[in-house]
Length: 148
Image 1 (cartoon, helix red, strand yellow):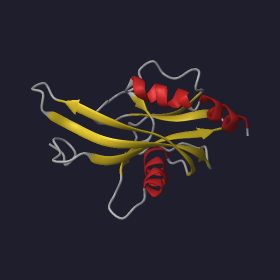
Image 2 (cartoon, one colour):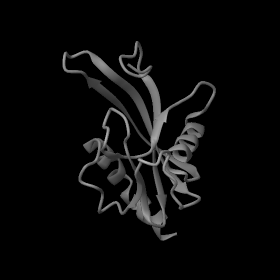
Image 3 (tube, rainbow, N blue to C red):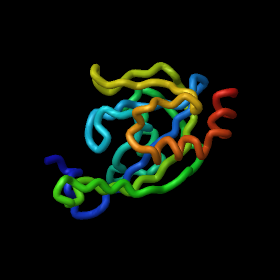
Image 4 (cartoon, rainbow, N blue to C red):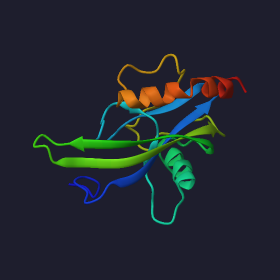
């Protein structure tokens, strides 16, 4: 059991809709919740760091991409019960729109997958339908950033 499973309190986290000229940056998750499925990069906020700093750090760690945070998009709870109904994961997630400052991807591990996707051609195996909806909620902004 890791320190994030079966928490005593919800864990604050961030997610980033990172946009470059090739589209939206997605990662295939290498751990639960959503292991093996595509999602936006993100993770837990560390002690002493702002959410924006966390976005920049997590994106670079997971993808090798440098980015700048542009705007707050949404907040959501990710609550995942186990088979017995106990809460295995509980994250409070704030999602941000970010612009890629670099575009050469470098996955965190050799097995990891990272890719650029047009918002109208997102993978079918997304980690959560809410992630797709969050991306599509800023579709116009994404298309403007792609065109820059």
